[in-house]
Length: 313
Image (spheres, rainbow, N blue to C red):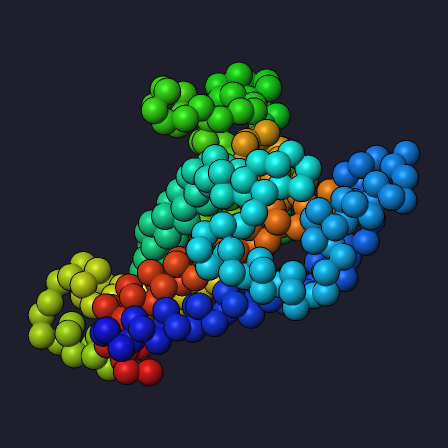
């Protein structure tokens, strides 16, 4: 198991290095005019040249990149070029909001998808048709459309939930739960619709295998066969699909945070990209990749625990 974990960690570090390098190179070739944007349209060429030198924009790509990399390795991503706020501070102030809705949606989607998938695979009646209809609806309706419907019906018209804003858990747990309910629901809808179909298909496939018929022939109750053996064998494939959808979940959270005016990483990423604030953009990219690596690592560990063949492979 230790070798399995080390392999995943090394692969994650290499992925982080490759993505950060490619992103920095692309940003380097699109950094023209950033000094002008910071100083304004009436800045003189001399002022622009001084600002470029101050930001290091006059240096060649290798020098700039290795200077950034050296700081990033020590946890220093620099400061924002537009408001001088440390990048780490900007991210840490916003990460709890994004992690709350993204990880909350992922956990809820996994539980609901497993329950719906088991019910659809075993009952094969109206529940099965309902799950397949839910899957089609999830594919057809993007999360931002669901968010708009939720905020219009439950926040603006019914006034059950707040339409915008975020309340920290430490301030008021009840209001915190109310503030994240609609954003998480918007993200869960599409995710659970797709994952439930994967659970259903995997469970149907496992129930047809010889070892399941052998377990039944030994007189084991059907409930024990399903929840102790079938679900354990079917979970790795469905969890892998769920982890792959986590990347899309992060992208969807950017739009969801904009709709509900949540102070998360999404609005920061949009603003910094629009402005050309390279230190902030790089910080967002690095932390996003780290989150993806950690979630996939957890899923790999769970799959390795459920299925020893995964550890061997």
